[in-house]
Length: 236
Image 1 (cartoon, helix red, strand yellow):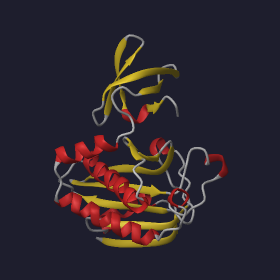
Image 2: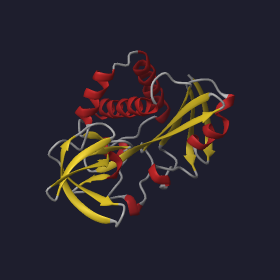
Image 3: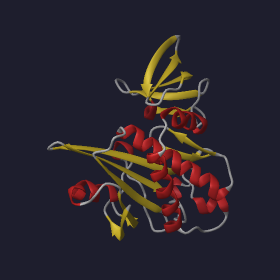
């Protein structure tokens, strides 16, 4: 992998989106600070010094964009578990990694199709040693808080990239789906809430099954399907 590092940048994803044609497959861009980090639905992602902020470029990938994001997310969960020797990390598909009920990481995917060329950019942000803003202290957490010690962000990045490359070479769909389900926070039987877009009504339901991108719920005596990203655990 080719690695490019910035002390400060607007967004590693945005940088690769602007410049992807100039870089080979598996180029990695990282930064100490992002001034305009973004999460799902263009929400602001606080990206201060001490965190791990990076994006990987996949040019003309053989695997689907959703699969590439799945590999990056699963690898990140497993690396965090190894670093802390704790199992309380989990995936809330499609974007987030939680430690218990607090978010430690987010993953954002951008797909590009232009002139017969395709590219997928998967950006990951992980709270490592960075301070969590006071207004987010009840929702976010860092690896340093969990383990009670500081970590080397460059070493963590190298470990993640090695495992991502291994995942690309050894990818087996059934194996990764099983790993995803093992780490999934929202499972069949979970009580969840969802906001209905047409009237912004908050509804409560129970998960019936847990495929990757959509989740079938039982709400008010009716089976409905919502995107995984729109669903939140009830007790959150």
